[in-house]
Image 1: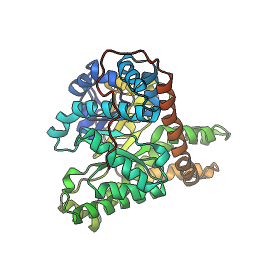
Image 2: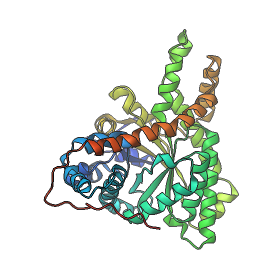
Image 3: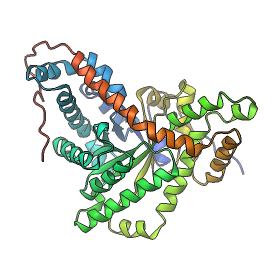
Length: 389
């Protein structure tokens, strides 16, 4: 059979990716993207469909970008704590970014135009506290296209269930294995059933579950680098795609069972898989992730450098995940023969995920404390938005 000709995106355009069923998201938002008009242009010109906060990328703008100076100075003048200041800044930014995507959200009937926001990761092992902060954030932002990020810890699974049950959109994070993904799907289904019993419209509840592909390959490739031989070298850069293929197979299977069909008949939306952390290596490696993780009903969150590279040079070769589970298992078997058990590595990455998030979160507090406290003339959002009961 003749191989189909690769599709090449037009300059500044991600719509060929969308035509393959992948929603492109921006990984990392800040106020300057909105006030400069850049975010609006990315949405209009490239087809950008969603966004997610990234504390690791926000600390720099908080410390240096003038767009935050007035609000942070006013908050300091009112003796608002660094934690309260981070909250106030986040709410203000999220309202603006959600507004930018509302047109996409309406045009796609809630399927796209979503904005995913971090909660305080120090709450990741406390389900009740996580739910309380999620409710507070959703009320403070007050936009229909907001998702709250919840790490897939044991407590996080309960929080995912309860947030979905309350009608909140949820982004489950830190998934590295099919086992963990299955637990997240169960929590999502449990929450949908709670929401249905409470009379909530299921069609209004959106959810994604994310695999940090770059982190997978960084960890596995670091281990492979210590193993001699051509077989080990040939496996570098293959594990994240294999993990994604196995998760996509599990996604298909779960959407085929009777429990899901009952929920779907009541208006529920599938919980989409979202690929994150694709910034690994140079431009060619970045484009490889975007082109190598393509299948219907998925999303891909790209940092600005990755997105810029994708809109300039992206070449697609069709679906790369569907029906590829046997090839994925073969990759993991080959890793096993090199002495690397992917299940063990995945559990370690899951355990390390929350401490890494906490470190990035605390850097936001440090960035706020480092800002000068020059007295501004005016500033929107100079009070900490109330955390509602």
